Figure 1 (tube, rainbow, N blue to C red):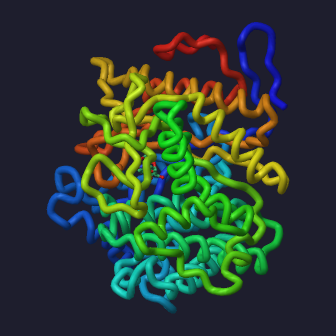
Figure 2: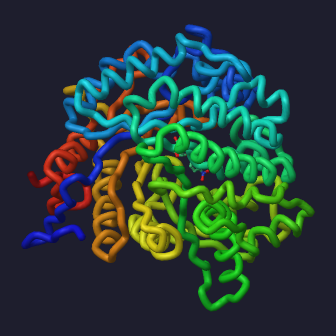
Amino acid sequence: TPATSPGTELVFPPGFVWGAATAAFQIEGAAAEDGRVPSIWDTFCRVPGAVANGDTGDVACDHYHRWPEDVALMADLGLGAYRFSTAWPRICPEPGTVNRAGLDFYSRLVDGLLERGIEPWLTLYHWDLPQSLEDRGGWASRETVDHFVEYALVVQGALGDRVRRWTTLNEPWCSAFLGYAGGQHAPGRQEPAAAVGALHHLLLAHGRAVTAMRAVDPTADYGITLNMSVFDPADPGSPADVAAADREDALLNRVFAEPVLLGRYPQVALDAYASVGVAPPVHDGDLAEIAAPIDFLGINYYNGAAVTAQRPTTDSAMPTGAPVERTTSSPSVAADPVWSVSRGLPRTAMDWEVQPDGLRRVLERAHTDWTGPAGIPIHVTENGAAYDDDVAPDGSVPDADRTAYILEHLRAVHAAMGSGADVRGYFAWSLLDNFEWAYGYEKRFGIVRVDFDTLERTPKDSAHAFARVARTGRLGEEPRGGTVVP
Ligand code: PNW
C-alpha cells in the first residue's frame, strides 16, 4: 500500500516500475533495411487517404539507427524500464524463416538498455503483421496463430537470456476492430466476421505463446496488454443508456479480459456479435488455452466516455474508446448503435476526454473483477496525451497540458493502489513523438520532442516532471498547469 506523507505529497512504493513505452513501427524507420519485409502498416500507408498527409513509417524517428541516443536519453531521465516492441517482419520475414540481422538489432538494444540499468519490457506484437501473412488471411485466419507462436519462440530464443518481461500482444481490440471492422487501421478491412475471427485468433495466439514460452523458461514473466476504458451512461436514469454503457464495456474491456483471466466470453458481447450474425470461431479447448496463467496484466488507459443509445441531435465528438458504432460510417459489430456524448471535459489533441479518475476506476475494477482474485499484478503499460506543442525561443518545450495529464493520472494510479489495486508500474506513452497510426506525425504523444526534419530529440517539460517523480517515487502538489514543486 502506498504511503501518503504529510501534506498532499504522494509516495509510491520502492520497486515501483517507472518507464516509457514505444512501438517498433511507430519509431524505427529503416523499413527496408537488414532484411525487413513489409508489414500491413507499410501497405496501409500507401492506400490513398488512409494515413494523414500520406505519412509512412519509412523513416519515423530513425530509432533503428539512433537507438543509442534514445537509450542515453532514458538513462538521463532516470527511467528504470523501457517498453518497446519487436517487429515481426524484421525477425520472421516468412513463416519458417529467421532473419538474424533483425534479431541482432534487438539484441544490441537489449544490451544497451541493460548496460544503463534499464529493464527491457518486450512486446511481441504491436500491430505490424508481415504483409505476407495478411495475404494468407491475416488474423482472421487460424493459421496466423501458429505463425505467431513460432515467431514468439524465435524472439525468446534470441533474447530470453536477457529479457525477463514478455508481453504477447498490445491492445488486441485495436488489431481486431480498428483493423478488420472499422478499417481505420491496417489492414483496413471492414468485415465484422473477420474482426470477430481476429479477436479470437489474437487471444488464442496470446494463450498459446504464453504456454510455449513458459515451457522454455518458467522463470520469466509473461503477460498481455489490453486497452481499457470506462463507459458511463449519458443519462443514468435511462435503462437504454445503462445498457449501452454495459455493451460498450463488454465489447471493449470484458471481451478481452474475461477470456484471458476467466476463460469465457461475456454473453453481452456474444449477443452483440450475434445481432449482426457473427461469432468467434471457437474450437473445443480454445478457451482453456486462452486462459493460460499470466504473471501480469498490462493496461493502457487514455480516456473514458459517456455513451447513449439515443442518436445525438448534434454531431458530438468522435467516440473515443467506443468500439462499435461510431458517429462515422464504420461498419458495426453490433446491431444496436452506441453514441458518445460530450461531458464538457477538457480534451486532448486526439479529441479524447481527459478523465484521470477513469484510470483509478479501470485499475480498481480490473483488480476486483479479474486480476486480484488470481493474485496477478497490474502494470499501466501506456498512458499519455497528444497536444500541439509549442517550442519556446530557448528550444525548450513547455508542455504544461501533457505534464498535468501525466501527473494527474499518476495521482489516479496512487489512489487505486490506496484502495488495494495491485499496481506495480507505470509507463508513459510515449518516449518519443512518433508515427501515430492513421494520424501520421500530426499527433505528438512524446515526452521527448522529435523534430521530424532534423530528427533531433528534445525532452519536453513533461519528461523532466515525469523523471522527477520516477527518480524520487514522490509526487508533490502541482497546480494544474504543471509546475512541479521539487
Ligand atoms: C494506443 N482508439 O492506440 C497504442 O497502443 C499506441 O500505439 C498509440 O500510439 C496510443 O494508444 C495513442 O493512440 C490506440 O481509437 C489507438 O480508441 C486508438 C484507440 C485506442 C488506442
